Length: 262
Ligand SMILES: C[S@@+](CC[C@H](N)C(=O)[O-])C[C@H]1O[C@@H](n2cnc3c(N)ncnc32)[C@H](O)[C@@H]1O
Image (tube, rainbow, N blue to C red):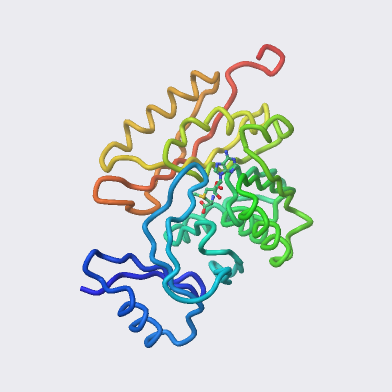
């Protein structure tokens, strides 16, 4: 079997196996895809910033590329930040739910994979896009401008746990597009929401078959934060590994106490 690869624009990400000869893989791929700008050996993502573990096999730095997904154009440096390729349907689905009166917070914006399509297709009153990695943030700003939605998107460089201090109670909808361990950010998501409640899209890695237990855990955690929660929908974004799925929960969250008593 040959090494598997995925394309982000004109950059190929290859998963090398122990018996693959990197030079042979480069020869094969450049022979097949003449316009390749770079080839990266890819070993997953790491750390809080979900940085890709990659090694440049072919091409030059910076490994900046442009790709189009659901009609939105993204520019990114494939060596410096991740771009999830399996989330195309989920990004389009959420953008289609957004209405023009909404304020949306994208807590882990990356290069804009939720913020930009939401702004382009949902045309909400405002999108707040928060990103901690300064390099990814640069591309987020570029992508917002490039897709003509700068008037609707406010970008924030920083940690969503701190940015929430200035955006508390503003949102009708919050995207928590991060995993694993997303539950530790649920309190932050709830703080972004308006006092009349709103929707949180919570992504996480969940053991296959344990979805119902996970949903109950989310409801319990929200209750501990003084919110009552209705699970509107639970779905699978993609299979992540043999044992784990990337799962999405749409939650309608309502504070149990009025703001004056909180
Ligand atoms: C997994 S990527 C997801 C990007 C996008 N939401 C998506 O689903 O395709 C997560 C992004 O969150 C950023 N990030 C991690 N911790 C953060 C934090 N505490 N506040 C804001 N951004 C953070 C990382 O730098 C990274 O760009």
